[in-house]
Each structure stands twice: as C-alpha cells, then as structure tokens.
Length: 356
Image 1 (cartoon, rainbow, N blue to C red):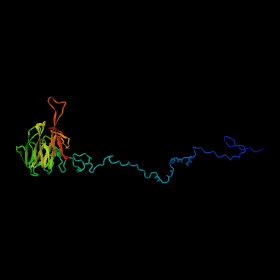
Image 2 (image 1 turned 135 degrees about the horizontal axis):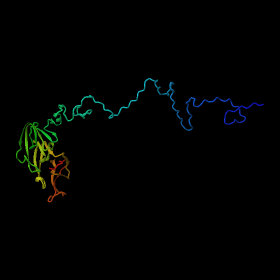
Image 3 (image 1 turned 135 degrees about the vertical axis):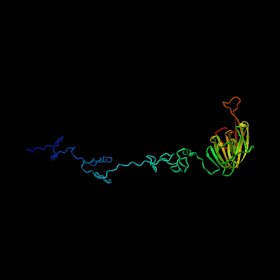
Image 4 (image 1 turned 90 degrees about the vertical axis):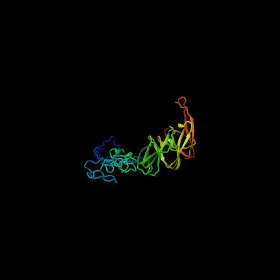
C-alpha cells in the first residue's frame, strides 16, 4: 500500500498538487514584544531623501551608554566635573545697575546729586555756581555764593543783566552817568553835577524833563542800575552810534557826544532827543526787556517810543500814519508816529519790546 502523504503546514490553503515535500516546520517565532529592538537604517523611499534614524533610547541604569558620534567630545564620567550653569551675557552700556564711582560710600559735597558727574570743564566735587577755592559754608554765606561780585580787571564789568560796575582806577578817566543811577560805590569817589549848559542837560523824549548827568571821579568802583532795566555795555573803537536819550545810563568822559533833536508832528514832547557818541570808550545802554538788532532796509519803520539806538550813518525820517482803531474815543484819530530809517547795507537799528 502506498505511504501516506505528509501533512501540509498550518496555512490557509493547500499546496498545489505535485509539489515537493516542504521541509520540517521552523520553531515558533518568539513574541514580538519580547524580542530586542534592533536599530538599522531604513531603506530610502523611492524618489526621496533618506529618513534619519530615530535618536537612540537611553541605556538602562547600570549599563554604559552608547559612544558619541565622531567629532564630538565624550561626556565626562559620572560625578566628575559637574557642568557649570551658563552665565548671562553682559548688558549693553546704559542698562543694568550703575558702576559705583571712585570713593563710593563717601558723602557727596553739598549741591551735588550722588552718582552724578560734574559738567564738562568743571572740576570734580565742586558744586555748580560756586567759584573754585571759595569757602564752603552751610549758612547764609553758602546760600549767597552765587551772587558774589564778579572780580575782573576791566574798566567796565557787567555783574548781571541789570547791574554794571565801573572801575575808576583803570584809565584814570571820569564817568558820566544819569543822576540817581548809582546804587553802590567802594573806595574814594567824588560825585559832582555836570555843568548846567545844554550839553550837560538832555531833555527826555517822553516827559520833556531834563536828564541831568553826574560826574564820577576818584579811585574806586561805582555800581550803576536803574529801575531793574537790562543794561548793555557797548564799547566803541572810533566808530559812532546814536542812542535815544531815555536809554543812556552812563558812558566814559573820553567819548565825544552831541545832542540831536528830531522834530515831528505827533512825537510825545514835540521832539525826539538823541545822543550821538563817537570815539573810544564804553556806553551803557538800558532797555526794557531783551532788544533785537535789525538791518536797515529801504522799508524799515520803527515806533519812535520803542527804538533804542541806530547806526550814525543811517538817515532818519519822521513818518506819520493814520490808523483807525475800534476803541478810539471821539476826537482821537489814532495817529501813530514812526521813524523810517534809510542807509547803505551795514547799518542797523536796535528796538526794545517796550514803548515808553
């Protein structure tokens, strides 16, 4: 009797007839979850780039880790050279806490804010407004340091915007000033009235009263001021200038001066008196407020009550204009008198923001 055919493997279909006998069945494969994971490069997909393999899993506790790739330093063994925390980058200039200056912890001098640098050109540690070398006093003297007298070796020294000082000992020449303008003097100074001639008495343009001058001589210093007006010393070097008589405070006797009269209908007092100075010396001009200097053009007009000075080469013409005002009362024409200035390029006028 023929031998029995071998039993096929446990598959879902029978082998075709006439097939060769299959080998012995292989041992059963181990479970998938219990087999160790093998990391191997994956095949490149068609038409694409190779996919990088996943990062290796950390080694179990007690087993050595995998070697780092070529070109990277090997990590230190456990417990050796613990890595330090990365330090924050240095902040840019102007940020972060300020660096303490030299001498940190000392009390700053009076008048200076801590950790504040002195202005450019001023010595460190010296309060502003106090001259170097002056004694520091916390009392009344310390509070009045900024108002001390300005020591200079010049004949005319402007102490502030409203006070000027004349040193009679320099040059040995007398000073002519408006009577009542002296506020303080030091040394041996003699005051005498100027002669009663017309050259010594100048008529004011607003009130019509005489402007009497006093002569200051001797060896000392005289301080001039009047009604808290702003003072402007003007030094002449052989040139000439015209100044309104109401705006003259003091001048050197070495200057040649001449009184001029500008007449015109509508001018307060009937005329405008000016003084023309020429020579070498200094004139102190007073103004109400900060003046403005303008060049003379063919169409330059100024109010006769606001003009202060002008160049001697300028020609002055009285110009009257009639203006109607809403608040004019019966009989008032609102007439305004202006002075027209003419002259070659280089001439100027000085106007104050105030009408006498």
